[in-house]
Length: 383
Length: 220
Image 1 (cartoon, rainbow over the protein chains, first blue to last red):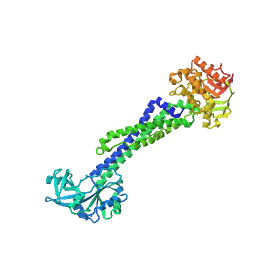
Image 2: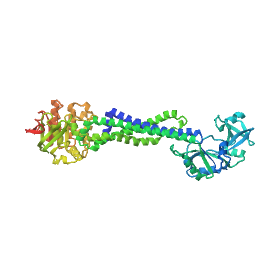
Image 3: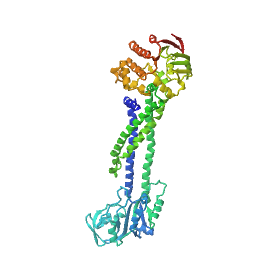
Image 4: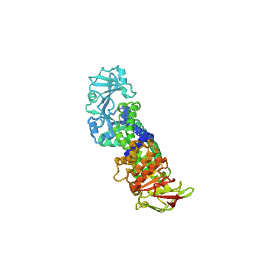
């Protein structure tokens, strides 16, 4: 008669102990699975939310006069448009930089008032990246008008706007943003270059940094070192407030999970250990009889450890299902922006199938040793 | 078959030492049916467990079938017990979640050749338990439980059966049936060492040994 058969029969006989043990493991697995599933969603949410705060890096020509730059809001110097391509092709650039957007910005007189005419190229992201690009995509022959410009000129979606003698269709009138975007008119980079008669030129590349550093580490030195190699004719400015907000958000979430994890593990292990000790005590006579029949320590220990492994496997499957269901049910309520991106993580099932039985066996180790150490003569004499 | 040479067993307790066996010497010849009789607490069960390799004596040697039991390792003793010794207990000690056949087959766990269900069912048929093969102990009478325990003890064709008051919880009819089955084992060449505090086994035993306070008092 195999150990597995004995274990199965005992599980069915002592259902309460089995159910309580499975419940402990299942709860732990479900919490871990839902945590890791939503952690991925949380990471995406954090990235998306803080990404939508805006680009936090501005790459401008090295010779830019910074006093003029901050006063005007853009560089008075330009660089060739192919600088963007060179930067994008640089090895490992997407380790530090992402969402690269080349732009050309200049003051432009439109119907007697100064606006900021801004040309934007399509966003460049890492080749294997599935993230949506930032900002909005601009079609050739169209413009997006800032709030203030739209209000002043009475612009409407679908209407026409003449720039540099060419007619552009108004794709969108932007909502009020409270920034200089309100006095901008956005067009495709090539269109704006033709209007400004600055074909092949840009004066800025916007980006987001990818560095996941701790609060006391300074990413700017890393960013500058990388840029010096990739694009020596440019320099980078970091908008610290945005960068710090992203970093703190990410670190806060990680600290919270690091705090909760050991507590969860200890409680689960203690619960399983106590139930296993109770099981050993319940089966004292049975162990004594098995000893009398010639079962060695290995077989006695195997009964309890095999039971723990079996419970772990059952809990792994059920816990994965429950954890994923919890994440899919409540995740979209918590992470509203990336709700549709929350999905089950099949790799977590593999993790659970390895970790849960191992953890259950570890928690049952001491009770198994207690069973082995029992003196059958004492048990059988007590009848 | 079984020899005790000046065997003592002392238990340390908070109230002082308790001598369960006191320089006990006894020889059980192969094929003998020995009944050991004595009051509760005289050391009968201790003697039985020592013979079964489950209780290391404080002093003296216990030899079974030519083997000094307590010079063997724990693993060797367990294997020895599985192959050569069958136990029958007063309280039957059946596993509650296994049916009759499974309880009997429990004895095959460590046995060489691992006797299968056919052997178990044959034994159970001889003991009149064929209608109860798939029943758990809770569904059996006391007599049926003890017969199941006897079948378990006989599964590996042991040379020695150690029975600890096997009829203590049985009515006279069932007790007689148990003794009958032990006698059949004895007549087939097996050795039986049975401990009891009554005289019911006297009619079946070749020899009756009185025990008092951990030592042999008289042989009959």
